[in-house]
Image (tube, rainbow, N blue to C red; front, side, top):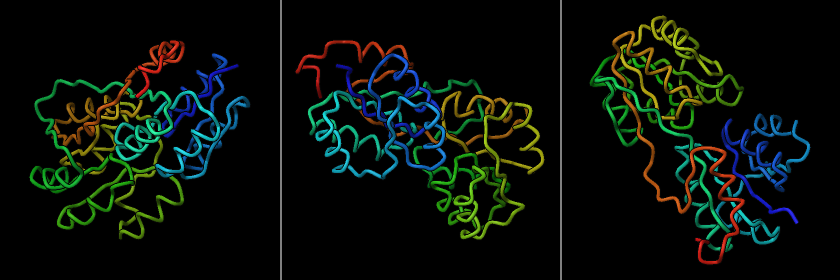
Length: 260
């Protein structure tokens, strides 16, 4: 009988991991939170899809009732609450939790300023310049809109109706919005930053697949300061940064003592 995996696939690499594990003959159920994510996974016929929002208790219930053996958490590196709920639910359901997290980017540039929160990023950015270019996505956009009323914001977001409506609700004008889906090359980042007359770049260390490397390279070329929101600090019982290590975890015959 194949081992059953519940995989939180909230990212592009999470969806690729679901396909990778399905190809290794694991019974994979992938959980997504957007219609776009669901459509991407529908092309892989062997993957079951959960597209219903799950809080911590819902997650524990599905893990128990459907007799999953593993929970693989491939949510976004900054999705702190999702990971916390996943660890707790897996613990309660007495199954193995494994965290897949893309590697961070280590970049040598003296103008990177590290902060630990979105609020701190807004404050630091305002100290460094007036024309601020946000590449942090839409989820915490309101923090910047509220705290940077005296600055000129340019926000780079996914081109979906939901996100564009959100921007409009926050009072952002079309001139302030760059609605494009990455990945972006260094050259394109340079041109986009120049077009916006950016004085400060705000970003997250979302790894190479999240385009952190090319953003930093572009900022360095233009000699722009970068406010980097560091990843949340979470203790993961089992952690891997590549697909092969995830596979090694799954192929191990876990004893009860190795469960969290």
